Every structure is written in C-alpha cells, then in structure tokens.
Image 1 (cartoon, rainbow, N blue to C red):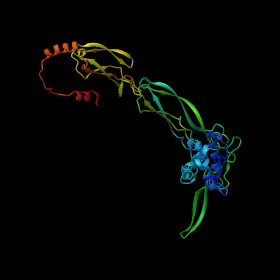
Image 2: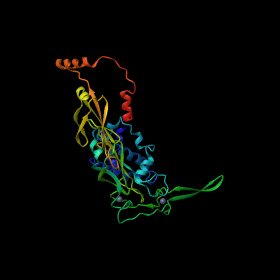
Image 3: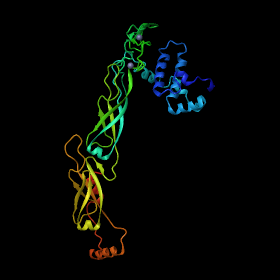
Image 4: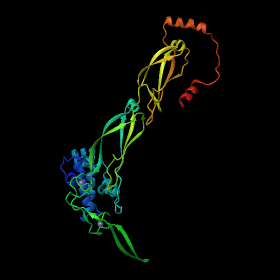
Length: 372
Ligand SMILES: [Zn+2]
Ligand SMILES: [Zn+2]
C-alpha cells in the first residue's frame, strides 16, 4: 500500500535537492491552491491532505533523510496520520498561509509577533555591561510588494463573490421566519480583495524572512534571568500593524569564586589561625583587580569585611554595591612534628575550660548579614 503513494517531491513539484525555503514556498503555493475552503478543484481535499503530508516529511530533516534513503518504506513506523488530517492545526495552516485566522472577518491591523533571543554573557559582562552582536531571523514586510502580497505592478481586485464587503449574506427560512445569515466570504477570506498575481518574493504572504544583525547594548548591573526589550525589533505587523518587540533573555555564566547578591559581591577567603590571631595584611581579588585587606588581630571565623563600592554598578542608577569578604579561619590538618610541638606549647598556655557561649550562633550571624 505504501508503494502506491506518490513521491513527496512530485507532490510538492520540487526537485530532490530542493532547499527548505523552496519546499516551504512550494507548500504555501500549493496549499493555497488546494485549500478545500477556497479551492474549486474537484479533488482539493485529497490533494490538500497529500500536500500537507509531503510537506511535514520534507520539512523535517530527520524524516526527509529517511525518506530519501528508503522511500515511503522508511516512514512506515512513523505515524503520519495526523499530518494530512484536518485536526492538525487547520486554523494554524490557514493563518500561516494567509496571515490571519481562517474564521476572521475583515482583518484589521495585526501587531507583529514578539521574538525571544537567549544571550549568554560572562559574570564580568553583566557587571560592567557590554555590547553584543546577535543574528536573528524574522518575518519582515516583503520589500518587493510592500506587504500587499500582490506582484509589483499588479494590484488586488475587488472580490467578485462578496463585491468587496468580505461578507456573504444569505436569507434563510425557518419555522421562526426568515433571517439573514452573515458569514465571512470564503473566496477572499473576508478581505474583500483577491490577489490575482501573488508576489513572487513572498508568494502572496506579504512578508519574507530576513536575517538581521543587531547590536544589543547590555547595561552595567544586569543579572541572570533579566530580559532586555528591543522595541520594534520583533516581526513586522500585518495590514499596517506595528512590529513586535525582541526580548533578549540574559543568562549569566557563574564566576569561579565571586557570587552575586543583588548589587553586592560575595567572596570567601581562607586565612590561617596565626593570621586570625595576630592580624595580617592580605590581598584579595575584586572586580577591579587585587585589593589590600587588613585582618585585625583576633579575627573570628565568619568575620565579614566590606569593601565599599567594589560591588556591582546599580542598574540605571549611580553608585555601586559593596564587595563582602567572608573570612574563614582554616584549621590546619597536616601538621608536621615541629608544627605540632609549637601548637602544643601554645595550647598549654590557653587553658582547657569549656565555656558555654550566650547569644547568637555563627549561622544566625550569617543570616543577619546576608539575609539568607
Ligand atoms: Zn511580496
Ligand atoms: Zn469576498
């Protein structure tokens, strides 16, 4: 049975090496011709199903590759039943083809779709801002026909079916009397106009896909999960509607040791027990390079030191957050004999009493400082 099916390339009237664009264009042309709602062809419904099935296979890289190798037999395990049927996105196909809903009445201006672009940036780029060039593909008003869908030099004619009103009125008799049934004109789909010569660039859709390079200015101080709006950089509108927006979703790569908490930067550093007890001067990394940090004598584990103004620039405002340095006191684990002796000597002088501590614990103090 599968072998009696027609070749998909023949159905779409494209060569076997057709590009995706050619396949898509052929599909649009044929689907418009054989759409059962508008077609006058006697076998429109069967042809329309066939066209849809062929398109769904050839438009899918994996299915197309299998079909190219094994023919219809290669797709026997694939359920294609949904493809040709009318349950499958019937309205979607229609709106895709004609740019508006199949059941819509005379279409007014339609705003273009918003687009989303996911942009990954580094921690530093988020902190200090950056400029990124991105490439997007979007539907724009066809430059050839200015969005009318009619081949330049031709213009749409008034629909002879509805005389340009976009509606069909039919008087109907019922047991309650006569009433007028108003429906959208099936010939022009409510536009009141018929394009006799579709634009060869956009195949009558009025829009064409364009690849655009855009520069995204990422302001200093943005954070992971924020989105930037580029007004009017989405897809073109239809029937004079405004364009949509482009939303750039920001994904910030984590830093190996800096952590961010709003506009503050957290950094944990380890110091040894001698540095903690006697005090020291150390250098710590900041977003602006290394910075000197004085450790006071008698520094306790978990002590927090703030480096004012070394945090993240406040988004759209002046000033910067702080860098918060958490001092961990690391207890040595691999002491040699000499070090052990020194510590033991010290230990004898420190006493062995256990003194219960009143007040807040280390964890509570952390919670207080960081609002964790
Ligand atoms: Zn065009
Ligand atoms: Zn009409």
